[in-house]
Image (cartoon, rainbow, N blue to C red; front, side):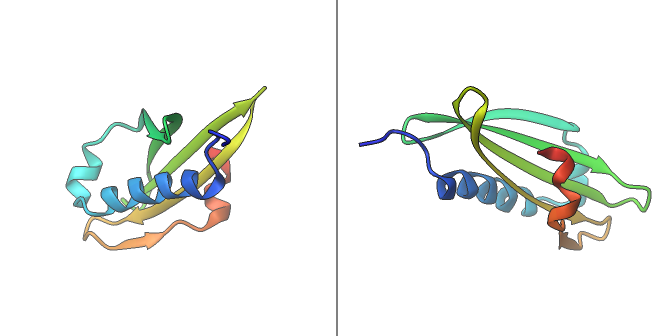
Length: 103
C-alpha cells in the first residue's frame, strides 16, 4: 500500500478549507492575516495549506487556498481554490488564471 496522498485528496483539502472560509462574513475574513500557513493530515501524511488574502482596489478580497503535498526533491501535488468576497458578502469564484501567482 502506497502511503502517498493522491491528487484528489489534495484537492479535497483545498476545497474543504475554501468551504469553511466561504461560511464567514466579509468582516470576519477581513480580520484574518494576509497569509496563514497550516498543516492538515491525510492518511497520516502532511499536506501544507496556505491561505492568502489579497485586498483589491475595489474593496473586494481575493481569498486563495493552496494545498501542497511534497513527494520528493521538490516534486509534489498542488491544488488551488479561491473566491472573491465583496463588502456586501457577495462571493464569486476566482478564475484559474488569477491564481497562477500562488503556484
